Image 1 (cartoon, rainbow, N blue to C red):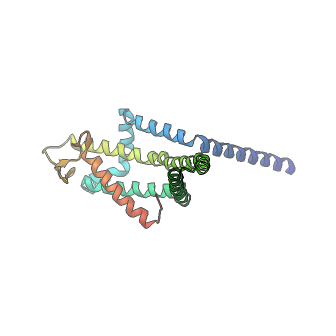
Image 2: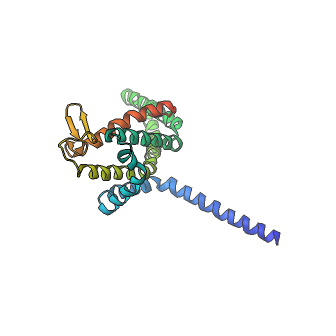
Image 3: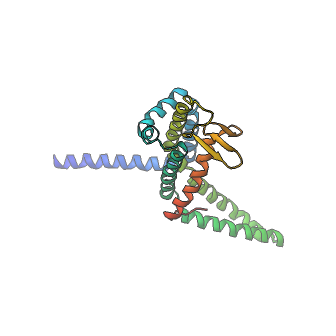
Length: 233
């Protein structure tokens, strides 16, 4: 009986291992397309109002007190959220992207471009043919590195899109109850644009809150990446 039990457990482990290996192969081969499809799905979900509002209301349980209880100005709330998104985005990229391999690949690409340019200038046919043969391998390596950079976006979007839905939901709630043209809770003064409420369109169709979020996220992410010693190209 013990032998039979051990055989069953071993068989189950082998099956699980095989499934994990198959998934790893599938992800390696089709990971970029899966990530692209998922990103398109997440962006499409933005147009579904009931989903957007439902997610916003659910997240409001967590972030709502920052506005309702602590009365933190909304532009400061966006700074806090951009710091959170910058932190988890940097951590995800740190553990999903091989920056050392990427840096060495970039260095090899530079060397190849220099050698290829020299071969063309010297009009050395043998050297040019040798570089042409090497070109496919270098381009494949660059494509793999591009895919590796792109795949973490799927994980990041899973966490970031709900936060955006909450920002839209909460700003809509505050904006609908405004009694004055400008409200200190959602007002911000942007360079070259002057004072605006965060939902106002400032740059074409882009509202002020997205511009502010992008400024904060890019700035804070750089600080986090430097602090955590996360590489990049």
